[in-house]
Image 1: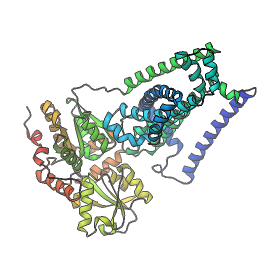
Image 2: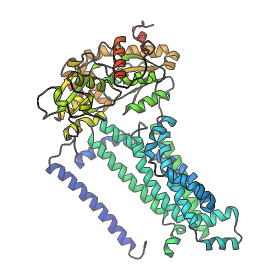
Image 3: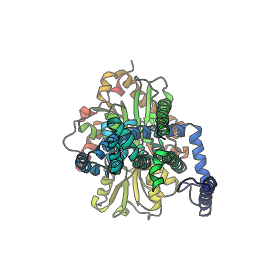
Image 4: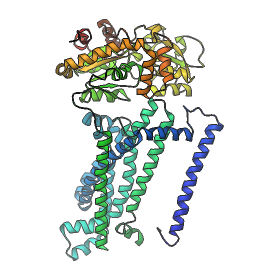
Length: 262
Length: 326
């Protein structure tokens, strides 16, 4: 399914088509704005958006905002993963606790992290902490579920084999449980990173004074639709990079074993 | 295979660690708080009602204060409560509400006077306020004098509040909502009335200077604990704000340029507000009067925004302005 003989040629072809398609969309956008004579305050053209972005790059704000957003996502995401994966492994291996705790997690998970904004402001004030807290919430519950189901779904044969070989304790968890559940955990990591990036932008519209979400609100307040759209382009582009990055994890041999077998 | 795996895992952990250190360092370097503890932090929003904040920052470099820009009222209130701000320019009814909720602040001066417009669709018939009956009108937030005054104007015209559809909306969205026909009218502080005027989406029905001369939108509040701890510094800053009101009156063009730069708004917009008519916004007479605050509290009680009797003497403190410079 993944890279084979034709892989490299395909890879280039895919990248090229993606590049050409985005170029085509931008050309279409610019042309449409001119042909239909759309007012810039309603929907600016590509060139104007790029000029607006250049302004942000030049005065250093874009870099500051990207750094701020990535900082919050990094901490919120890593804290959530660091707590959720061990909890998920615990729940996955202990059916009693799984049944006891699962309803709570299932109850918390569908509450949008954005609904927590008033509480985040109240508890953490203004700044990085409320945003990190919201990211944490967005990642923690789904990540617990992914890990739990990954661990609970391990083929019992592996566990019997492990016990026959006398593997116990720390080694049992790190070499058997974690390895066997890794594909699902990685899928969880990828999906929740996407969610985190969605949530950070919304969180920064409320709780902070920098970051890419703030950029959108601030540009709107300054009646700069070009920078609103420029901010959206940057958000999309970084989201794409993040997804690509986590996809690399799926290429690890310890993750691919399951897929290759299927 | 096992060895390879472990090393791959270790490489990932190492990469994550390097990334965390890198991004945290970069964040502290680029976005860390650069000002010292003794600097007074004053919250403001990019509206002309808060123009004294950037103007004073520009003119009085000797006073250690830092204007902190916000985009929404609720989070500015939170920042004031949590101590991240020492002072703030906030809507007068919001200040009254905070005080009444038991949060210790003093209302020390006004942001400006007039400076609010009631805008209607550009293609609305050239009629008066009667036209607004059964229409959708945008207001910035219920805790605003804009809202109280709109209801008052409607009541005077014999239109019950139930006969209009009021929606709360961030001011920057109002001109485009009017242009799209999502709302039929809006009442808002400048420069967002002028923004609707300039982009052709609306025309002025009323400017407050004509129907409510001396209209109050925002006020400057100081936390009680800051005032007690640093009375001299706060007094010096408040007197500078007050004096710069007169400066703006004498240098409206320069003030528009400073505002445009700090707010990131087109200078033509600020000039429209400050230069088109001399009393569209006023920065003199920024001393709040007791009866003005009383009247506002009464209006808030009438509209269900406030319960109980407001102790105006506990909230109002104009002594900082009148105090002689030491």
